[in-house]
Length: 137
Image (cartoon, rainbow, N blue to C red):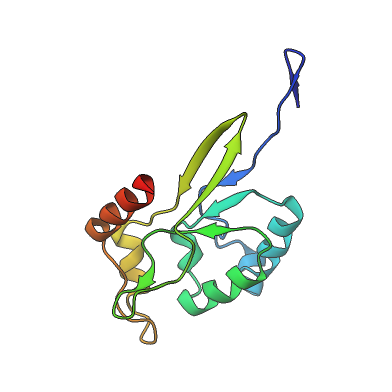
């Protein structure tokens, strides 16, 4: 993009809710949306409440199908300390480093806590501490 005679890159960021319960998403459980998103090639996507609509295991499958980074700072298996997604993403934009952090609310995390295979995910208080560590780094 050219603004005032200067070249500027454009960036695509998605702040969650790729999956909205459309007929296509209901039929293909997000696979078709991931294919479309791969064509649109966003720079980064953070998770929203509809990303867990088909269960956490299916979301992890969809993340593997994505050719773009999906971030979320407060989803990991607490008892083993294994993060499920990258917590953040940094991009240099016009000479300035910009930090993107994905975080989910307690309400969304409550939906994922019913997954028997996953275990306990961190709460917002733990996530706030994690964000502090990420920003300090």
